[in-house]
Structure formats: C-alpha cells, structure tokens
Amino acid sequence: MTLAQDIDPAYAAGFAAARAAGVEVIALDCAISPEAVTLRDRVTVR
Image (cartoon, rainbow, N blue to C red; front, side, top):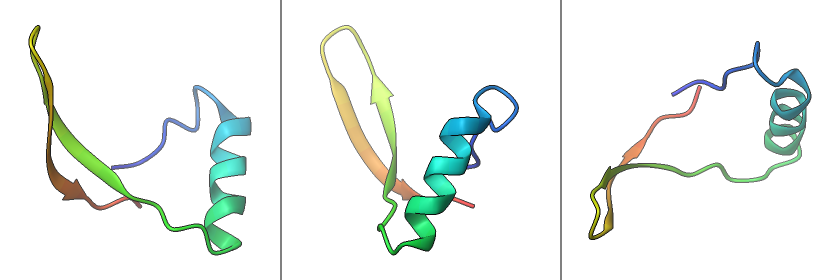
C-alpha cells in the first residue's frame, strides 16, 4: 500500500515524519458489507 501523495502532500509529509520518528504503522485489509467491517490480513505499507 502507498499513500496518495498527489492528493494530500501535507498528510503524506506528516505520515513520513511520524514513521521517521518511530511511529509503528499498521495497515489492514478489510471486507466491508452492510452488516459489518471485517478486518483481515496486514498489508505492507511502503
């Protein structure tokens, strides 16, 4: 997974700064239905 830096460069810069400062990034794939949001596997963030 990558960030949409072209859509929100300020968010991408803040995200990069947080990672550089040691914040752990966890992203999860999920399934969305009218009844529930189900978390599935971890996704690699680049």
